[in-house]
Image (cartoon, rainbow, N blue to C red):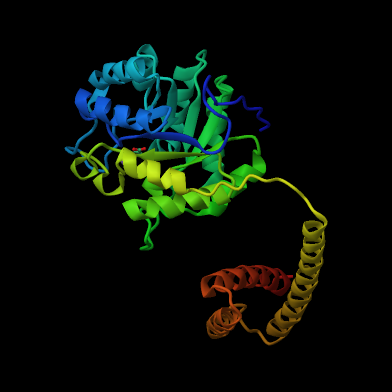
Length: 355
Ligand code: PEP
Ligand code: MN
């Protein structure tokens, strides 16, 4: 579906990258909101985030303070002039947040994954003119993410952006949620005008990962950052390990290198031409490999052999990734490339064998 987005920038917010949203994972008390907010405002932060309703994996944990927290945000806004942002997951959340003048709404990862919930939010948002940021669904599915965006867009919300917060994974990694950057990059390819805000806090899950993740988001051309910041992170009622003090956040932001030059010199044109030529060669070689694999399929058919020879497959993956690593590439990357090549090869062989 074609979508034309309007800017999410509110009056007084600089268009220069990065757009920064910061604040605690959860609003805990009026005092905590005010003190954290004041410190952030003093660091130049203009948009304050705080979870009022918290989606928890198990019942019984801290599920957010609820509507009593909304006047705290109003008070912070009146005192500091900061805009406020909260997560909404139901119609009741939307109604309450808007009634208390919340400026930006975001939709959490668990909610984006649920089309019923997204439709309920879309219906609740109908007729309102509020910027909405849609987090990626917990599962790495770009179509589900786009489906959520379309639902909200169809409700007439044009001030839309997305938040990349990483994805659940069964694999153990250093991240709380694996970034799968290519999914956000695919979204950028499809909707170049849709702003992407990176959430290094929920990707990293650890304080020390916030800075490198912010830098990576900037290097990939993302528009903004939403970072969890708490006056006393270790005492936070939720996500204590990943929050930064406002001062530490200021430090991270001041060290970010934001490269925004867009110029195309002859050197760059020439380098890109060389890359285009190499890509042509890669495609020619791949096509040749597929032709050979087709001949192998013919042989297997004549000799009544199954398509998949597990030993051969293992040998290809192991040898190639070792060879690739010796050539300065990551073994994981080379393995993925050959898994994809092998999958296409098997698909063709099955086609040929059954002809
Ligand atoms: C949050 O932003 O505090 C939050 C609950 O995030 P997510 O929906 O990304 O898990
Ligand atoms: Mn959180």
